[in-house]
Amino acid sequence: MKSIFDRIAIIGIGLIGASIAQSVKENKIAKEVVGFFRREKALKEALKDKIVDQGYLDLESAVKGADFIILAVPVYEIIKIAELIKDFIPQNTLITDIGSTKLQIVKKLSKIYPNYIGAHPLAGSEKKGAEFSSHELFDNKITILTPTAMTNPKTTGLMKKFWKSLGAKTVIMNPDIHDEIVSRISHLPHLLMYGLMNMVTDEHLQYASSGFKDSTRIAVSDPNIWMEIFLSNKKYLLKDIDLFIKHLEKYKKFLTGTMEEDILSVITDAADKRKSFQ
Image (cartoon, rainbow, N blue to C red; front, side, top):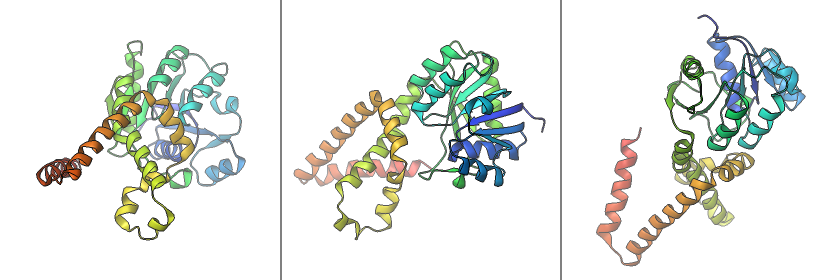
């Protein structure tokens, strides 16, 4: 396969960034893959594991000469780093981010870079770090692209081609709609599991079995990352919290009144919906 890019610079070699790097190298999508690191130890490990071809501890060196830059850092850092690197690269350089929320990021970066387009690969796990990365992470997974009315169609087409090369299926979506959807299917579930773990005592935990462990698996996700996600999408997350409280109140009403048929109806609907989702 002919390379799509000459030099891809990935800012942030964590689980997602490292998996992108490995998939790019595996599929020969770029002639060279370089990464930006905050710690020399992580840089050396990535070079030893051949995750990147070159690694740098300063942003200017990392982005120099890159024709495609991927911002694979937490949501609040994306805008900060985009501002920092704008003086180091040509304005028309292709830029993307993989942030879990999009509206704030898209509004800001679209003003800075004419060839920017937001992306959110719906892949990953509660684990973090390059050691858990895989070149197969994006296979048959959805990546949401969030172009605006100002996005060059060629940029959108190139990004679709890139993610397809990584094995992903792409979906085009308005950034505000993206944030509304992921609030309910991702951000609220994480918040609920953190809340459940806050409620359970150490005494309770000694009796927790596999069902509880499976249900609360995502509660070990990085708190710093998720604090930023919650705050950056609080517009929709607050609405979803209120909606979930209404559902809890309904369950509470049915239980208080020993309304067997109503209880059976709501949990059957929930079970059927879960069975339909594979």
